[in-house]
Amino acid sequence: VYAVSSAKTIKAYQGIKIVYNGQELTDSTQPYVINNTTFVPLRILMNYFGKAVTWDAVNSRVLITDDSSSLKEQLAQKDAQIKTLQSQITQLNSKISNLEDDNDLSDIEDTLNNYFEDRADDYFDDAGIDVIISLDGDEDDITYLIKLDFDDADDYNYLTDISQTDLKTFLNAVKSKINSEIEDTDYEDADLTGKMVDDNYSSYYVKYNGSSYTFSWDNTDLSDIEDTLSDYFEDAGYNYFDDDGIDVTISLDGDEDDIEYTIELGFDDADDYSDLTDVSETDLKSFLNAVKSKINSEIEDTEYEDASISGELKDNDTSSYYVEYSNGSYSFSWD
Image 1 (tube, one colour):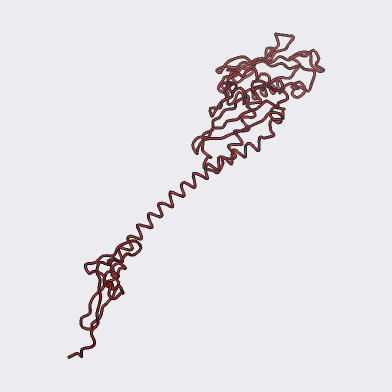
Image 2: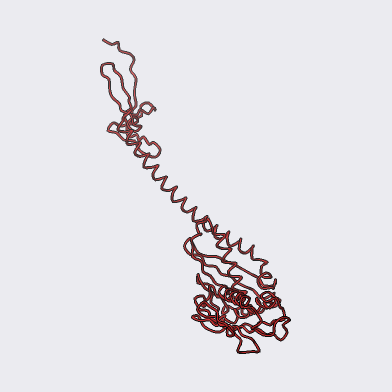
């Protein structure tokens, strides 16, 4: 029999809610506030934290152990969260990569502008021409836009004043520089096309389609190739025949299927030769091979690049002396 102690009044209140990190913890047994102290059923808390609660009646003990099933659920939730975070990281890395790609293209653009800033004098012999280059595209296709500004130019007013040969030389240099800059980047396999335009007259432009150039103001550039040949072989008398008194004149005719050249040698001022027959056939063939090679290099990347080449070299004063080239071989009129 237990002794009776003094009576004690207890005030207990129900309806208490337990909230952990915004989540309400529930159970069939409600919490109480007793004499201003909150009493929470142990099972509510332990179940939430993955623990098992059992009553040891023999020893009057409450046993708390790890609940393997709850732990598995928690681990599964953590794995799901990790996968979600990994997916978000992958998406962010992709966005960062795209931003870096854009920066790479703008960096290449800056490099081109810096490189060609003072090159107008090198390619056009006019330092007053302003060169502006911009790039657009992706890892599959890159397009360049080159603007030439002639406001401060010394010798040119328009894009059309520059020889097409010089323009192609410059454009080939730009193309080569772009290819060197995109090497070992995401853009290295991109197809390259572009356009050069007169900054003040947009109707004057040169387009590059990936293999050849077209000029808005002229459907043919044979005359430019002809001028280039005449300039290049101006000293051919000395270089090929050791006689700078021999006069060399070269003209071209034809279309994108067939090109014919005519070369006239004048001996009026020659020191060692009187006519074409005095020149050795070996020296003549060497000269003609050089002309043919130069024509091939000049028509590369143009509408004439697949044209068949034939021609004639003749004595300017004696029409019966000539050398014909056709189908890969030479024939001499005097032999």
